[in-house]
Length: 365
Image (cartoon, rainbow, N blue to C red; front, top):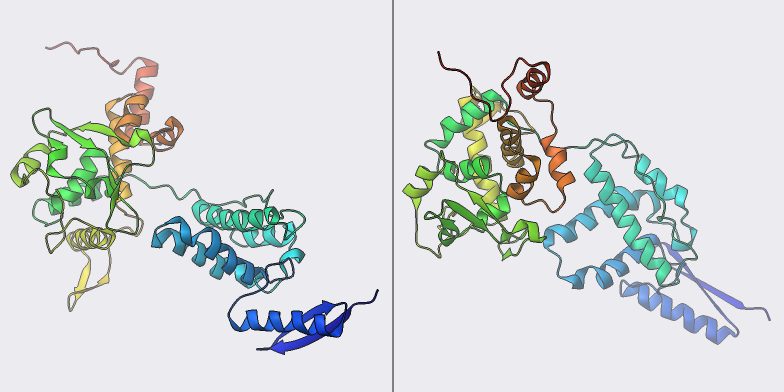
């Protein structure tokens, strides 16, 4: 039996519907047009990739309680890197080669960025296949192109010297020193109450973290995140001097409230600016016009520096893992294994017999 086809255009886009009778075809076409006017599409393999993305995100992502930052990642990767390539295509026409070209176009950029694009592709096309909208999943075997690891680094000797000097007087000094001397994540520091700073046992108890993109505190992602960190001797007097009531936050913003994502950013940016000026940055009308500080200096560099300091001191890898709160020791190893010149020289000295072995004592004259 031949089917009757009816077509119409709306906002420059062509719509088609089929039916055994002219009435059936017209009815289906009217439904499509009405859905399009409501900003919807009939869910099928013939819908565009952009229409499916909107339906998929609204149905499977928005209700999950993800943070605004996490949801924004999906829109940023789709609108910026996926939509220009395949947004106009019918869902059923997308092949794996189309998706691989999207990833290949991002070769040389950060590994995290490329992995997030692949994640969005995998999630939306996997759901399309499970929903029987497409016969196979074109994102299933996507390969990552060459990308930069983008790992954080340790402070240079000069940066450490300037940081310690600025921390003596800067309002964010205690916050910055806590990150440097404990290796905790910025969100974990923001969640601290004074009751978590155990002066009797010289420990800081970590059991919560600021949820990314919000002002809410929640439990850690893994059990390893719950831990006790001994208080560094250089940090102890600063904490004692600032000691507050047990159930008040250790670190607050300008208005006295617990740090949130915005106030954390302000704490770091103002401290970083003070470091920049201390390093000789040129300032004109209170604005830095020639910066001297490295652009890749971030709060997580302080966590990396803590791990590097542990390596230089000969702290075992397993101990560093617990101090940093890593569930997987390989994560710690990626930070711990570095090419610090002094550490390498010390290791070679032990190998060739010119150095002092751990635990050995030197003879006094």
